[in-house]
Picture (cartoon, rainbow, N blue to C red):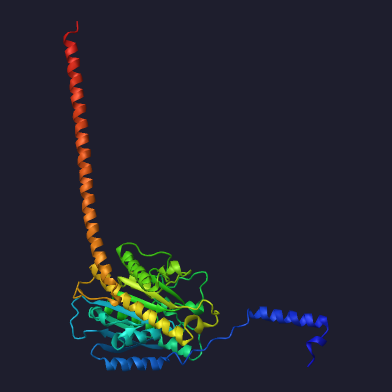
Length: 430
């Protein structure tokens, strides 16, 4: 083979130009893709086996249902785990219903790992990151939690077979674009590979199952768990705004408390459409708020590697080393426990659920009792301040009334005096 140094300069320039053109035509040279860390992550089959074994060991407080359906030749199945700390007790309306969905996008493996660890924590693991969870038992008595650990099982299988960037289900539909609120609208940067919404709202079996689960369970809190960044989102996704009114204030209050208490205000908080940088149409969370009327529908983004290449999807959406993996899982499992506390307290304060038996429980970390007392005293102080303000306003109105009465009487007396003087003058007039 002829060495490059022996080539004529003109031919060398032509070869260099040809190489540049070839690279330009290709668009870019693909960076190496990080494979799935199979020594850290469960396969979909092993993860579901572990969950089934966990449910079997704790059948007194857990159950697992498998729901299957099909549409136009495509079938899907979802596994739904129900945690009810006091399984035999009657739900008299005081229990908060929480619905959590993980793995809606196949490439986001870390989300299903959080689901598995959270189930372990709820049943067997009494500590997380050094925090004793025994005081959390009282909270659990007031909750019914349904967890879908892998909403997009068919899409997850595609990722495990090598399609590491695929977020869609088994027939190429983005499940988080297949819901009915603002369905089918496409932005200028619409990518059919990433965001294909299906042929109609709820065309996909996975979305159909989740809708029926929502209708039957009637959750008070919904969380759609994703990865790609770290954020705590509330509606809306399809427009750059949040809802108005008391419900929006309640959602924002819960997220801001969680962000401050657990994340030291490091998470992005707000509407998905206003915070991510693009609008998403036909999303689950917007349906949960607008149609299903869930009081607290959220989307949590739990991890993202901003330095990863856009082609290196596994690394972009999932931790690739054990240390980061454990840190992310512990951090977000604790975040969910705090969400359960915050949600329960706020829903009861807003009288969306009845008070139940949560009177003297000691929250995790021991830092909420003081805030509860402070909140109660703040509410009482605000009531007193309101009464005081009302009394001040009444006194002000009374003073104005007396002053205006005095002025009217003065004007009336002055007018009478002038009339009498004029009449007296007419008597002596020639």
